[in-house]
Amino acid sequence: MAKIKTVYVCSDCGSETPNWAGKCPYCGAWNTLKELRLESGKTKASAVHQVDDAPQPKRITELDTEKEIRVSTGISELDRVLGGGAVVGSLNLVGGAPGIGKSTLLLQMCGKLHSDSVILYITGEESERQIRLRADRLQVHNENLYVFAETDMDRIAKAIEKLMPDVVILDSVQTVSDSSVQSTPGSVSQIRECTMRILRITKEKSLTVFLIGHVTKDGTLAGPKILEHMVDCVLYFEGERENSFRILRAVKNRFGSTNEIGVFEMESVGLVCVENPSEVMLSGRPENASGTCVTCALEGTRPILAEIQALVTENPRNNASRRSNGIDYNRAAMLLAVLEKRGGLPMGGSDTYINVVGGLTLEEPAADLATVLSLASSYLDRPIGAEVAAIGEVGLSGELRQVSALNQRLSEIARLGFRRCVIPSGGKEKAAEIEGLEVIKVKNISQAIAAVLGKQKGRG
Ligand SMILES: Nc1ncnc2c1ncn2[C@@H]1O[C@H](COP(=O)(O)OP(=O)(O)OP(=O)(O)O)[C@@H](O)[C@H]1O
Ligand SMILES: [Mg+2]
Image 1 (cartoon, rainbow, N blue to C red):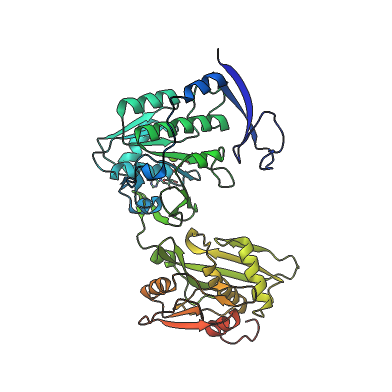
Image 2: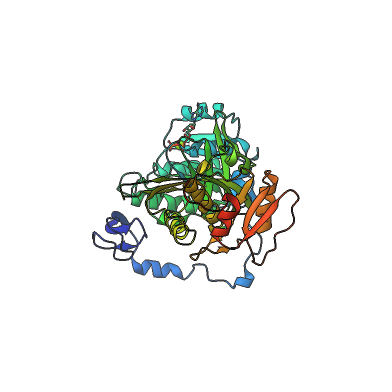
């Protein structure tokens, strides 16, 4: 009989230890060691014996140079995030909060894939009937789409062997279980073992596989970190409940860039691709209000305009609160300090709130200047003209630094009808002349504030 060996696996770094401890001895994370029971059938001696006829290492120059084969998913925004379609023989993981639309996106894909592709949709969460009803709502009519409500890994592997599909969707990886592992579905050991098996099937049979994964309270994928290491692409589906926009972001992609985002809108007929995100992000912008400024972020190859809003209110109790949504909290704190020290606006005793409209997260420093201007606008209670945009990185001395792809951003700003744009002076890339767009070059934040808000006379 196979011997059962117990090891403890860290759900953060995936390393193993023979004994349980409160703290992972490798990465130092607390309370992350989970029990894993392994069947140890083979002895070391038998493993050595088998090595003789195992494949040998090859010279890199002798290896196949053919590029990966990609298939279009039929959903342009999903193709964009995957790096130009799904790669045949790849394992892709789609994570996201409950109800964000993971199943919807992948079921819609089933209706749009090439009609010759055989697709197997394995559901461990919903009944076959539920999938059928959703498919009707999303108008997915595909003769080659097979639905299988199953959670047992052996039966799933058999079904794949028998049907030989081109594309497999597993909804979700946390619900499947392998009978050889003695723990409940969703546990570290189950997720690890099941993903291993699926990975082997994917590579052996050159399938295109999409796994759906749950996220934990703090927004990371539930299960061991090793899950993200094993798969080829990790996509996160993000969005806010009160907002119908959804953003698909690649956090790992072995076949393409991780900068691209896909923008969707959730409607009753399902997710609709937003081809022109700038227009959507700016829709409903308040007119003549203080505390808002538009910037242009570069998401992969695509420039997207975003509105940054700020609210600065006096707090006489000396316990100022700072909140930031869509912009890194530490970055926002730094910008506030620079604004106080270099811009001459004393905000220390004020509550400040920053928000990027539309659920976008701006990670680029190019959004600094617009953040500073919207804070200054709210503090001074003077609106920035609706036709003004701003791009530039802010340094600790209040100086402005140039950003990459300046002209690509300026073209998008002009295309959306903006007439003035504040940019840093100097830099390698010269701003091209664009008809109808006045480019205002400034050296530091004080000059930028003076250019769009006028001379500072204090509050109000
Ligand atoms: N009849 C409907 N009309 C309009 N929108 C709907 C309808 N039914 C569901 N939705 C939308 O679809 C979303 C649920 O999508 P979906 O089931 O694909 O999410 P999910 O990420 O797979 O969730 P879970 O984590 O529960 O599996 C709902 O939050 C809602 O916005
Ligand atoms: Mg679902």
